Length: 161
Image (cartoon, rainbow, N blue to C red):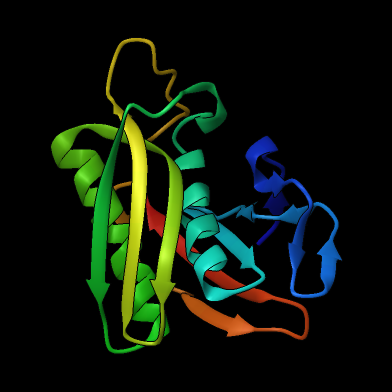
């Protein structure tokens, strides 16, 4: 799979422990034959799960164009990290489809191997939203992983479109 560039994929400098990270990649878009995919990054699990959500919704719209008008709390349980990530993204996608909300900002307050507590903020669908191609229909298990490298956490997610 080949990575593609996205302006929201980078974020500003931040302090992590005693280290100052330069501009850190949030995610990269993966070229995939029939579906869409991302590889997300984070200095910790909270940031990894936030960045995966940014990656998901960045496939559908340029998020930085839209200020959020409402926020929603999410709590997710799953047996392992991969399932937890998939469930978090699937819950966001469900709310997107059913309540017609484009989520543009994410904060994960707590995540461990089995539980996530987070918040997603967004805005109701409107004619002002410029959609980018096909919307994501589902979060798949295909090639899904979450692991830690020497410098950061990394996850790969493939989406059905």
